[in-house]
Amino acid sequence: MIQQTPDPEAFKRAAKRLREACYVLDAFNLQLDELIAKVEEDIRRNSLRHKRLRKVEPISEPE
Image (cartoon, rainbow, N blue to C red; front, side):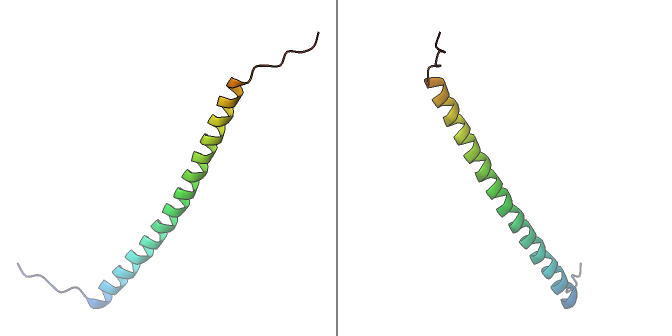
């Protein structure tokens, strides 16, 4: 079986497309990380609020 050497220009084009795809995926991962951080912060805030509300006794209305 004889292996052919890839065309240098085709190799350069494929490498360039691969780098561009990596940049797009890196940008997407960064956006996803930021979204996850925001959601986690929201969960922390809400769970703390709910815990605090459970500890507070309801104020009864004056008669």
